[in-house]
Length: 229
Image 1 (tube, rainbow, N blue to C red):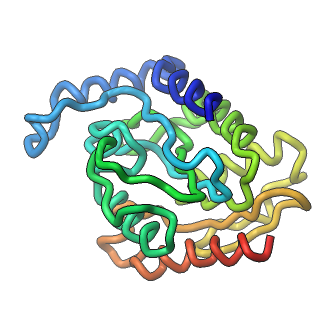
Image 2 (cartoon, one colour):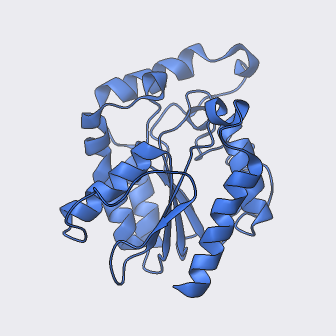
Image 3 (cartoon, one colour):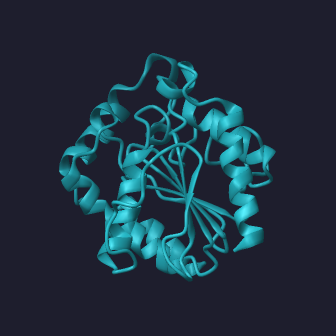
């Protein structure tokens, strides 16, 4: 627990990606009209959840007016609206809505992180920025001793996680791992099960590419994997 808290402080003070830090701070200054009376976080967003978690959720990056505003992963935007509703339905979250980092919401047996901890312009961190941020995820994987399942939200998160496995020699190649919704992979003996999912972005949910039921199916699969792993 203490090491996770130290890591969170280090993430918040990270300055490895000047472009992202500048963008996050600029958005926090300009604000969106609907939130003009609020104080934006405007810094790298730390991970959130249960240090004893067996399930890790890996997203892409904070939303400019979501996590970059609230300071908590998937909090304050449309992506979080559907994600936390589903996490509550499947027993991982204490409440069905995540409004602010002070709303009392807690996660049970689940920890949420991201491939990039700063809000990127156009929701697109560069490959270099993803590489800069990857050591945080590598340390989190070491600090979550009970980890049994990794849920990757979106192809970028999926690829980042596979890159870590390949770098560590857990897998020889990423080729057998094809991204798709609600797909389950077992990378190697003793390694967490990997489940891929479409990202709950507004682009996916508004078009029907991802529905609430589809996302719920992913976390029901995660629950089932815990029983079988």
